[in-house]
Length: 151
Image 1 (cartoon, rainbow, N blue to C red):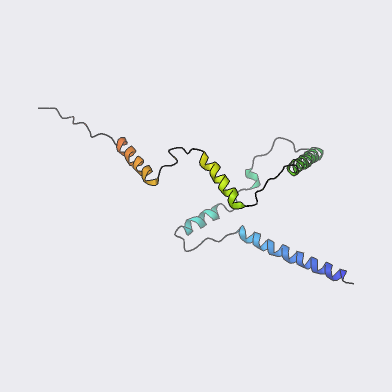
Image 2: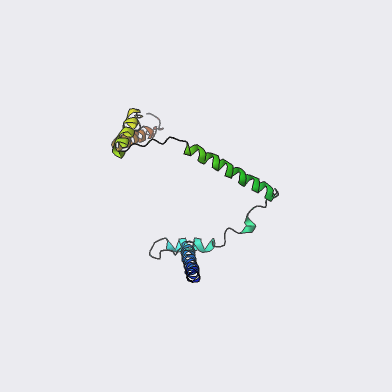
């Protein structure tokens, strides 16, 4: 006796959920331009000019024939077998977890600190700006040569 009510409730919930998701998707693909932005007219003009792009006519035609359904089914079955093999390999891994996340983080930090850092990576912002200033100074052209004859 309750089965028709449950089925009706499930169908109603599915229809409402699908409608709600459709509204979210529709609004996501048609965003409004912020009118207060200084570049809003330019953005809106670009959007309006390219609203129809891309069209199917703009895509190149494929000269290769489509794969046969049997070939597609074979590839799908190959992926399923590969997925099952991978799942089997993952299940055989002996996952060793430390119980204390802080100890694990400290161990990882110690391993990272053990690797030497390139000197360029350790430079501060002030050192980089000084390098840029020196490089610009060296790259400046020399003063022009006086071409007037000496008297």
